[in-house]
Length: 437
Ligand SMILES: *Cc1c(COP(=O)(O)O)cnc(C)c1O
Image (cartoon, rainbow, N blue to C red):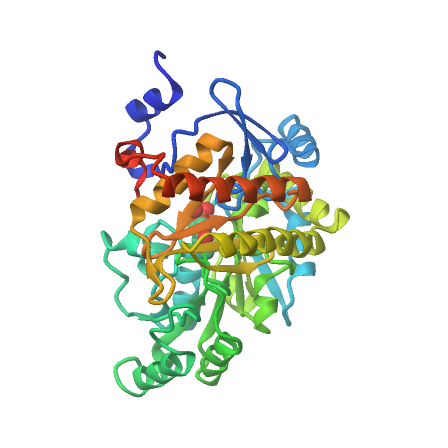
């Protein structure tokens, strides 16, 4: 127990489970602020990868968790129904559009939820192939990794029978929406018989792949093709769902009607909780098919209830839309001064700043430049991270409780960090440990 938290972290926490963007180490959190070792408070524009949807120590979550922890904390949903879990499932069904009999499965993480969906879809449909996109991130367990297309996953082979399609990027249109649809049709007509495809997994807005909003109508056209072949559509809302994008569900922006919907991250307000919603004929496939002893436990599902109740009571869908406009507007104003900002994009409070070394060619900056801006942002008092297949997109997924004053403060820090990095205030040595994916 000697040395700084960072030094101890490096000694005992496995590198395989770490993604560090700066020396920020935590001793606390309050509202939209993180408190680092030494007591300095930083504005959190990362929202802990979007999981801290209500910020830190939100009173509604804290009260719900304390009550549940003092009650039947250890009860297992596998063996007995419990009130918070059943009521959370009822609420999720009520807020998620869909028809027919549907069921909810609870897990601990977005990864296990996608794994569960994969496994039950394979078993229930008898089909073994899946389709997803290059750039997609669906998780870090065997199944969810095997259908992901992120460059951070090239250490693991894709699942046999997976077809990865390009995700059309309006800013760097290497493949147009029409070209991707054509490729999909070509695959169906040749090596990927559509009657062997169980489901298409898609992110309604690509997040870890670079905060990419698809061209209008593209995902709907993908869905139509799937429907025509009896292929189920699974929408992964883990990062962009639950009011994050200015709608309750991100897929609403795209006019999608998913068969299965995956929730995670924000659902538990940062506690380990995920959910799959799907048709009863799939989700009731067989008893005892996807069992996790502590999933859906009363403590995390109490937190989930508090999150959904707070989103409704505090009007966080509208707030996310308004604050997203506010923050993105301030970033766009920065783009007038800073050539390095090639694009500011996103929806609601899911915003990306695409950093380029040349606005004409839109060539991404080297990853070191992104890392330096994040490092300088930490020095100046704000936490944010990066995503994108070229590690050049600053990601902003702040708590939905962000205030206008904090948006102003955050944008000012980002602007200052960009200027300071251009002025050479961060060295290569400073960031050597923080270029991780
Ligand atoms: C983070 C993420 C996951 C995985 O969730 P974990 O809780 O990290 O297991 C899955 N899908 C998307 C879109 C994500 O952003």
